[in-house]
Image: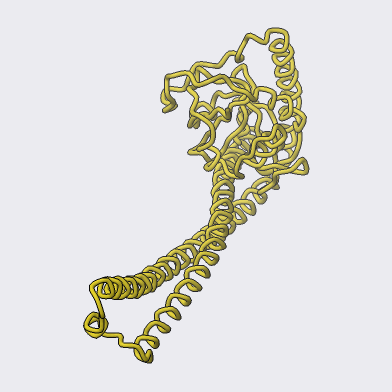
Length: 351
């Protein structure tokens, strides 16, 4: 997200120092926009997850409504037939006439039983009509609710898309004004990434030699992470770190979830899919997966979340995590310090 690089400018006065200060101010603005972009993109991803769920609900509601209407129609036909039979039958259909026509006590009892069965059948048919009519009304209400929700989510997704495109245009305009400074910072960041990747691979090698060590050391916890104190079960997916490291340098792509480009939740989703775990393409939705983990209990493979759930990554150990930060950047390893420490929300362990 944020560049996390301070200015190398000296305090000497004049136009050079002024230009460097202006460049740093613009870079700070870009960093803020990129944070906002990441959050907006994850809200857009969440809207897509909701739309997929609503689409399933709509399909199910239409199916159930069709069944309810068919049952209602059949019940209506059965009731109509009984009504016609009651008025067109040549037999005596009055309960009193049936009873008075009895030739003996046994005949009387049989006739009463017959009358009761017919009445019960008619009552049951009337009941079916009422039940199926209510079912139709209920399914129509569910369908209407799903359709209304779908319209709201589509509108929300469109609004987020417009916001994202606007912020991208603003970001790119600012980038053009400080292109040389940005290129220098990127060169510094590339060198730093090579060193961080080396450190992570060293830690992985050490962990392989000491399998009893459940996790790498974690940094001091932020002041208020909101996480529980109790330690959850050990992670079964520390191996995802090795998979995630294969994609270092892969560009950030809005909505991306493949090696051609990832956004932050798309990256986590893809990496975990390689070990047979299905996660939704949304940092907000992924925060509901697995179990919560306190900061001091973090293990390699845990999901770590920042910025009001607007960003996430995979903890790799040693106080570092791997993630796809924002537009214009690539999959990289970052330290959970500075901005990330202040923006930390919590962590989840996939079991």
